[in-house]
Length: 269
Image 1 (cartoon, helix red, strand yellow):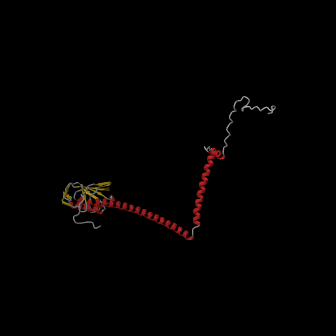
Image 2 (cartoon, rainbow, N blue to C red):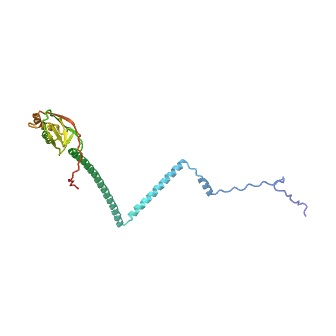
């Protein structure tokens, strides 16, 4: 053994102090591109400008989709055969015509209903008016209008029933429409009976002064009574006093009960 060669002194790791070295830090973990993309997208951090751009892009996409669909439909029609196009056009024309016919039918129906309603209302009014007129003539309803009052005073009791009947006939001939005498309504079958100073109208006794309440045109009624040799002169010869007064508001309110005929019936269906 070579004494000149001394063996190398082995020194412990960690320095001359002999203490163990501190553990080395772990190697840094490498971040992949996918992880960086994910970290950038979530959670989303949208600015106002980005939000507006997103909305505009959505609207643009929706418009393009609609345009594409419309273009597809038009393309389908452009690609259709002539016979198919004619058939489609005929169907559209037929449907349009049906709608026009339906509209016209409804218009005609509305017009018919309006006319029917107007005619029914007019017929109802005419019926009521006719009923009122017949009621006046029959004495079953009261009447009011212009006319005269004829008052006959008979102090000597010489006025006979036929003189009063002559007055009724003259008034009717002059256009009298409603008459009552001392509260008795005069109608078509009215009659006067009794004797001078003891007069009855339709079986009801009346006494002087005899008061006629008459509805009609005063300008025609009064002259009819005062014609030469007429009612007024005849009564004055019997010492009776006759007074005729015109009025714009005469009321004839004496009524007759409505009577049903025994044999006559309406001939209308």
